[in-house]
Image (cartoon, rainbow, N blue to C red; front, side):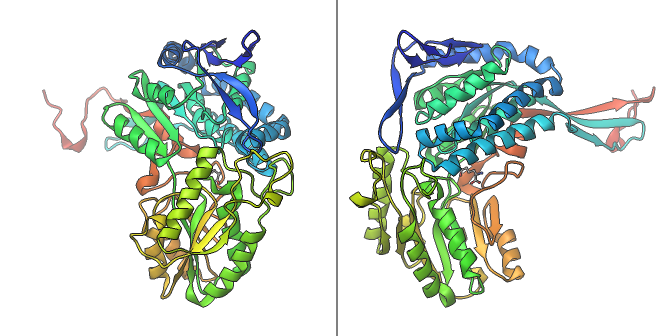
Amino acid sequence: MSRDAATDRYQHYIDGAWTDGTGGETFESKNPATGDPLATFERGTEADVDTALEAADDAFEEWRSLSYIDRAEYLWEIYHELRDRTDELGEIVSRECGKEISEGRADVIEAYHMVEWAAANARHPHGDVIPSEIPSKDAYMRRKPRGVIGCITPWNFPVAIPFWHMAIALVEGNTVVWKPAEQTPWCGQIIAEMMDDAGVPDGVFNMVQGFGDAGASIVDDSRVDTVLFTGSAEVGHEIAGKVGGEPGKLAACEMGGKNGIIVAEDADLDIAVHSAVMSSFKTTGQRCVSSERLIVHEDVYDEFKVRYVEAAENVAVGDPLDENTFMGPAIEPEHVEKIHKHNELAKKEGAEVLVDRADLNEGEIPDGHANGNWVGPFVYEIEYDSDRRCLQEECFGPHVALIEYSGGIERALEIHNDTHYGLAGAIISEDYRKIHRFRDEAEIGLAYANLPCIGAEVHLPFGGVKKSGNGYPSAREVIEAVTERTAFTLNNSSDIEMAQGLSADI
Ligand code: UN1
């Protein structure tokens, strides 16, 4: 029973049981498109996190002693559940986080791709056989689980990203304490129900609902061996700083971006406009890989501008459950405020506004959705200047700068790389030389050519450089953050012979 019938609130999931919190406080999840409450949840406290960590710590020895393949069996159950329920769960994602319905489904599909990859990984080699300098020695690198993994996940991919973190962590033999984003606890609840239904042993998976204070209790606890975090740069840097000061503990954080798309003089402008619209307005610009900077060569600038502006004027903003909607609402009223502030900042810094749909007209707001968190595209052109904050700070909304450049690919790359962030980016060009320069010199973790800079597949490394990343809390690379490596050397001779010519005489 996941909901306390007497109080009508959803509970935490700790040590295999649905549990009331100790704090007595609750919070509500709301539909961003209507403002209507969806459900009520326990708000986790430090004491709740403590109980969850104790359960995870206790469960670790037994869980790690199972084979990879036995551990993966639980994930196969979840894989089938996610696949069979994609439409239903996709709709829940759209209702709770406001993404349009195809994106809601894509979130669930991305989740089961990740679960599939992690479970299949159980039958893959898990180490290396390494030659030794001494012929009679065998050397290996073996992996072992680190222990308790603390996972803190964002609202914009409320089903996929939790599985980025947890699927591999669990297959590798770790136990987990997870705090879902406070904006999307309902999606968290559903994942916890799936873990329960799949029979994941008590204490192996634990979920505490709540806010940043509960997250901080996970980060600060010495029982946590690795913190996996995906979310804002502000919080990620704080976590990386705290954990970095604790030898033996690891943090893998993936933060935001101020992602750029270069449109070169030889670009196919159909692809350029299409890619830019997808990158800047899908998910209402609320992906960490969304693009807020379009860096366009002077030879194609005017034509690109006309076509992009027309497309931005026509982007269908509306009810996320309507299949014709391209862009749903922002996640919460505070975020709408933040987006408006970024738009104002750009204006103050000299932006020439080309599209201002930030305040949607009344006619554009779907019936019955007046209390939604509506915000539309805001597009401006601005002269490139490294000191402009609007070109440096992430808005995390449909806020896009057009920057004209002249000169060669060097100049485009200089502008592209002039940000503290380094997550994703794209080049639109028909010239393979420019594309290769971009691949090698763009300071980012996810680079695309003739494509949007969103939509990465789960079996690719997903993470950034500079202030966008610290470790890879996702997909293939998450293995590094949730396992220890043992270099194991075995002597097959009855003599002792040392490497490096070291004398073994005693
Ligand atoms: C995010 O941007 O917050 O690459 C995650 C993508 C998705 C994940 C995005 N697979 O767009």
